[in-house]
Amino acid sequence: MSVNFDAIIDRHHTACLKYDFAAERGYPEDVLPFWVADMDFRAPQPVLDALAARIQHGIFGYTDVKPDYVATLQKWMQAQHGWRPAADSLLVTPGVVLAIALAIRAFTEPGEAVLIQQPVYYPFSLVIKDNGRELVNSPLREENGRYHIDFADIEDKIVRHHVRLFLLCSPHNPVGRVWTRDELTRLADICLRHDVLILADEIHHDFVRPGYTHTVLASLSPEFADRTITCTAPSKTFNLAGLQLSNIFIANATLRRRFRHELNAIGYDQPNAMGLTACQAAYANGGPWLQELRAYLESNYQKTHAFLTRELPRVRLTEPEGTYLLWLDFSAYGLSDEELDKLIVQKARLWLDSGHIFGPAGSQHQRLNIACPWATLEQGLQRLTAALPR
Image (cartoon, rainbow, N blue to C red; front, side, top):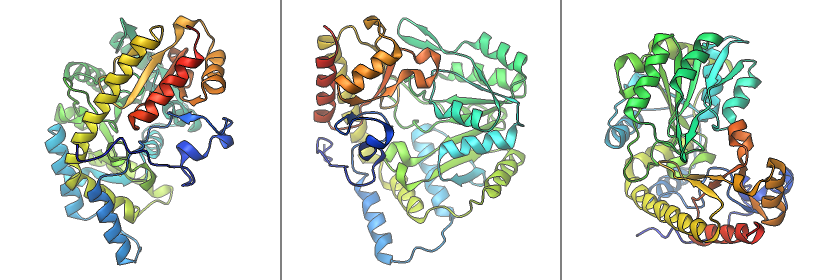
């Protein structure tokens, strides 16, 4: 590899959420963090070069999206995912979670139902509740270590609760499923039949393991695209979360105007200058870096799988199809969620994401971020081994 992903880069004292806020969040100062979904790798060199050139210019006034920015996004989406969104479908926000909140406010009324599939990325439930909407959960079904959509339950919940909006996580965080074309088509058909809008959070779309393919839901048909809000960002792919920029695609002009109205209502207009610069440079020239990164993450996964099999056979690993997040089942230890959290934090001195925050189906699970140098990940696994009963 031309990129040294094994390099240990000290992120302390950079106001880093992952490393610098343990005490503020109630954790011991010496915990080793594998929780929040950012990476311990420098962004691609073309991104750093573009940011350095922008800094040298020295003026950071208001900025906005130009046609070449949109063309760069279109080229990336076409090459990576076989999907070319229309130029006029793009709206820029500071983040996907904000976009979800805006969609909830734009397309539902207080008290109306929004559907999710737990265990799922926990801000989904938080933003639904914080906006005064009814959270309706259609849990994923786990069978032989693989999670599936319960289509009958989804349709039943949509009808019984008069669901107006469905939040889809694709690829799925935390269980790692990469939904097939058939699954997405069946899901979208149900939503279309009952006039339910789909917000597709596809932020992890560039992390799919060998043998799997991510399908952009909006690419399946014009009818589906007309009822879908597609949320993407360079933040996961290129480790740019702190630059606060996401690309939201809404093909339907009426829906786009309603979303734009909510965006205007919160006072957001021009995007962050450095975010735009980094995003365009990443999508234009970051492909080779990403190819090497995917290979490194696959190696981390294979090493982690072998380690758990050898040292911690009672920890059941859900084999991921996408993302760089692992979903670990500790139920064989017979611990409550409180006992498991205490063991991992106080004894193993690790900071993971507790499974129960993803919904009731996440009980006795933990989420582990493997996007870090193997030496760091191995140290964490060794701490876990020392803390768990044999």
